[in-house]
Length: 616
Image 1 (cartoon, rainbow, N blue to C red):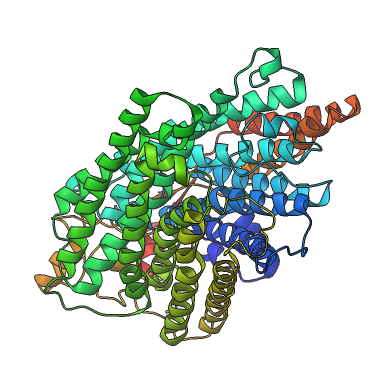
Image 2: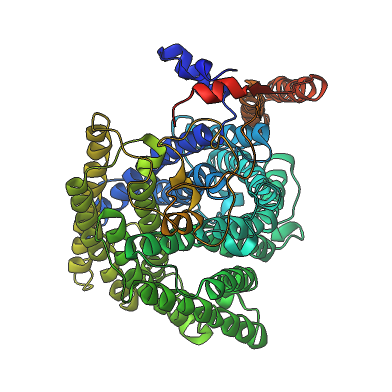
């Protein structure tokens, strides 16, 4: 494929290009589109929940539909929206920050994307085929075992597919960072976002297998008559909780660490200062990840693990506040004395600090086992969780989109609309969730369909629902901003006077990223060159032919095969004829694997002459 071949403009050609692409940047954009689509669906589901709780004894939706709504809201936001959005950003930006031309395994990168998309579609097909999952995003057994219909089966198969895609992506990022850094890019010169991607990938590598095993056990119980979780047949429901939270708690850090890395880059860029305490920030990231893996049982204080186990997990959980505090201190110190620019990206970063601090403080409160007996399964937990996940991760994604939008799409998002988005979302967020702390302390349980009059919960729930609508307005303004920006003037390569390598190449970057590998001479490599008056990176190699991978439709076909087999697994319990779907789907997937294994694909070269014709 030549450079000219990447410049086709017809709709069919563009569609085919994206279906077959192995370019990490286009895959990153597809992750953003897919994650953004599911984010809107998850947001609509949240609005249904808040409308139902707008007034006492409301009958806007039925109890069963409400159960499906909050289950799908949590599942969609965690697995299909926030995490893919982060993976999209990591996919696009991380290789640029380390001076690489692609990720280590472009084919696997494409396969991970399509598995995520088909897994998400499979899960949401449940809405139209008899009912969605209804036992909470945690799908606790025995509730999930006894759930009628196929909703939970869609949950199992959908998450299994999308989870496999995430695991593939994590392995790919790990190998990319280890093996594809530009000359001079030592580990301690990597930007914090790349460090966060690296550590997050380690967490994915160890956490997702626990989820995979758990889903297989539930699948066997529901579809093939085994009894891992059926107490009446000798099973144990607590196994589900251990395996789920062995995945679920690191998942919180899989979602928040990339945001931490992004904020570090944003604070440094818009303060015109080197990140304060870089080394401490790196080790704090590693320590947070390690401790995050060790504290899964703090979700299970009320299960009855005993005072010794509860005490150990309580202390370990509180210890996470130390490295997190180091990060917050260093971000503040980075801004101290800096030449600060307040734009949309920086607003999200500034709004994050107090918001996440509140989430962290309530986390320490929940880490107290004795107090947790009071807070457990109340709206206090809902408030804490959203302060961490939305106040941390979603704020981070919004900051990142405003920060890297010029690099990804060659256009700068409109500042005025960006600030309207921030303020409406920020105010709406605090209206929605701050009051939920007090609703929880007043005893309002989570997951309840209705509340009664004269319980003192009316005003709090009304305010919370109004806040949810304000957040929706913020999202709508952001969508308008995207369409408005399409026709704006082209962005320069380095609109923010950046410090890291992604700002040293055009916006958007050519599909080979770097004509010549850059020579990295320290932390903030582009900034070093600017300070020495060069303004661009020094090349580490002479201009020569570039080897790139070929596009392929095989990952898409492979994912279609697994998608078809998923329907077969779900419905074969109703009639054995559905086993034919399992056979057909697996034949397609295995056939595609065999084709990939047997066909020699040596990629293609972009010649030196073509590169020389390209304008800088």
